[in-house]
Amino acid sequence: MTEETPRSGLRAPIAQMFAVGAVASALGIGLGLLIDWWPKQGSTQSKDIDTLYDVLIIVTVPIFVMVTVIVLFSCLTFRMRPGEEELDGPPTHGNTRLEVIWTTIPALMLVIMCSYAYVVLTDIEDAKAGEIRVNVTGQQFTWKFEYPATEKGGKPVTSAELYLPKDKPVRFYVESLDVIHDFWVPQFRMKVDAVPGITTKYRITPERSGKYPVVCAELCGPGHSFMRQSAHVVSPAAFAAWKKKQTMPNRATGGDAETIDAKSLFASSGCNGCHTLADAQASGTTGPDLDKVLPGQSAAEIKASIAMPAAKVTAGFPNVMPTDYATRLSPEELDALVKYLTEVAGK
Ligand code: CUA
Image (cartoon, rainbow, N blue to C red; front, side, top):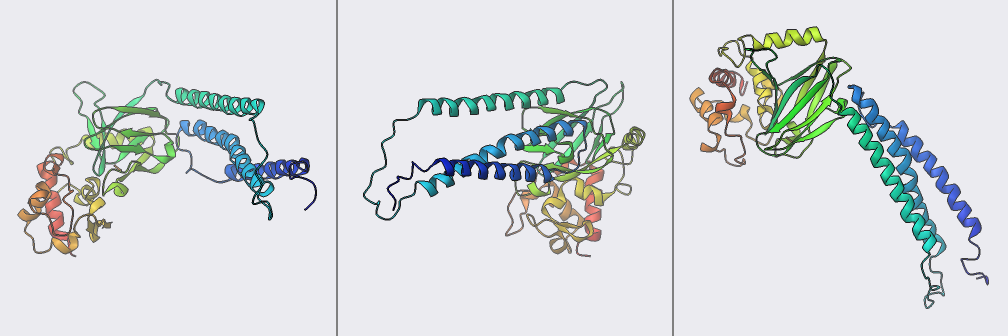
């Protein structure tokens, strides 16, 4: 051991510490900016949000690095050496200037970053001319999208798939019929909870055509991970055509069991979230495997199991199937679904 206490030789280690910190920060920021954290931008809002994210990386990575380096440096420099077991450290009396600095700088940074985030969010949430409205309803374990009638006497369009015209601003009115869900299309970047009893909202303007996942981002029950549907961003003309087709009497309203596409109904009603059915490429395991339990059952039995699931629960499975399919589906849809299940289950 030399005569020196560890403290007197600190100048060089502190310089070293700063050098290590600077290099690590630069590497961390570079890496943070290089990594593709998010899928491709799909809305005009995504750019501002991604820039906000990048700025947060640039500001927060050096803070993380600084704290880590100081902790490691202190452990190395001030650690107990052999023979010092009985020694007490030098008395400290605080350092007012240091305390003022380490309180003021983070406080300022917080205020600046929060202000910036607030400005970005209010910009994005600005009302836009010609907005279309889409009502989004979450329910275990499916999403429903409703397009209110735009002209007098028109009928609202409901769909299990989200269709949006490209470059047209849209505002979502989000609700839940049971528990808390969260309506998220990662490509649009915005995301909001669907809370029973209140309507939450957000705006986006889709700017890239394509098919994107609609994801539930709030743990909402055994079928949560299957609460996924699709958002289709299409040309305004294709959107108008799609919407027109939805009002034609081939679906829920007035369609007969023959013309209803029961396989997509199986998915859009959320059945695939909990059940396995090879024909529909469904592999849920929360509820009974339909390929195993349905063969041998009559149409009436299957219908009863959908309409009143709690009346007969398969042993070994939780009694969690929604009990409102009889009202969620039209009688024709229910019949089409039952017919489909009798035809494909176990095949
Ligand atoms: Cu709905 Cu998770």
